[in-house]
Image 1 (cartoon, rainbow, N blue to C red):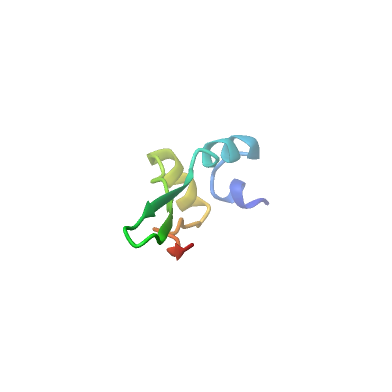
Image 2: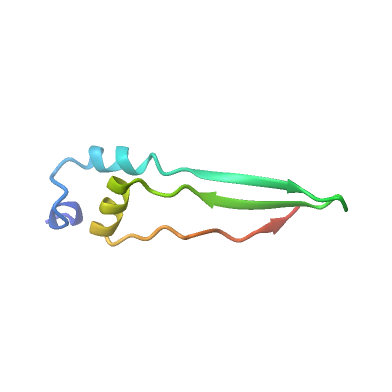
Length: 70
């Protein structure tokens, strides 16, 4: 039995992928006065439906990703 079926998500994976594909990753670029550019990757908050899917699949989105300098 597939993970999505055990989680009560049915037998059509396309719907699950379509819903989770809406979660976006955004790069925020912050230039500083000293000329250094800070970049931070941010992950959008999942909708209520996406949060339920993630919970049932036992997946967690990170709250943020590491900040880098360029």
